[in-house]
Length: 295
Image (tube, rainbow, N blue to C red):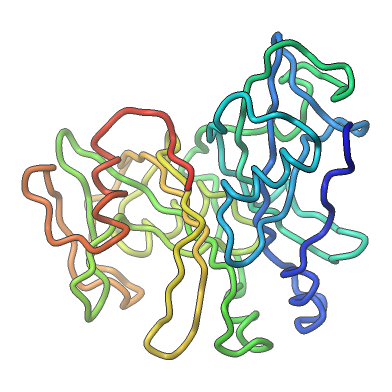
């Protein structure tokens, strides 16, 4: 398949040497390169993929992979899915136990170059055939531990990837927003992904904790991977943020029980509260129907 696709990750290798056998979240871009109703795979039936490095975006990693496997960028990359958690837990021979944070993008090729084969039906590729747009809200269970805290015990305040999933919950023309404790920052509710969780399970758990609502996540709105933040305590992160459309299936709402949120409200696009970057852009996407955004 052209040149060998990159394997491993400098970031993950360095982290593994310091954290022991902790299962690590591995930010990963997978390419579903389509032609004539088929998708390109490797000899084992897997999509070409590459791990995202600290300091780069998923889009940049995708371009790196295209160059490595000699695929001309005939069309732009289009985000189709974000998937984490079981059943995608992985025992990597070099990097140890991982939980890939799959960012699945697609592109179309004119023709079907034989040098890029083999090719398979989309339904026969496990990563694509197993992606579901939503899970019933009662399909999640609390997952023990705190992924970021377990990493911090070994790396202190150094920058790490922070996987986050949230929901843009609509009721008619209004959107549910919450405000972070002690700040003026309003945003869509959500939180950090824990080991073993899918995005849908993270959203169900976080929305229950923060709002008391039973929320079912639906179509993907966007995935943003380049934003960095330094918290007041000195902790540095690079976000892997996936925002899904959502709907409240049950619950009347209640105060946040985590202490992280001090206000919430339903807002139309005409009366949004003050929004800080990047939520000034992300929030407005929730009011529009369009292809999922990748950045």
